[in-house]
Length: 87
Image (cartoon, rainbow, N blue to C red; front, side):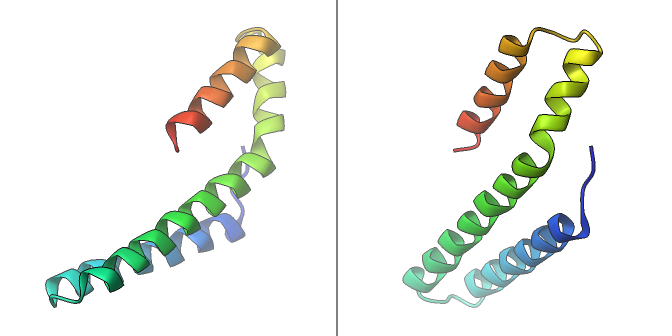
């Protein structure tokens, strides 16, 4: 599986957002502002997840099938379950 610099850069930005949220909480910022930033971080994480899945899911599935690690149906079901758990 290939992880691009675009993927890691997105996660680094999310890391910065999380650190900013923690700082806001430590400083006693308004709850609405904290929740707004938490929602933004969650959305950013969802977009990063979509990017990783979009770029790598097909190749991962093909590799598992070629390695005999399950049927296409079972592998697709596993991938769907991973996505459902992330929500």
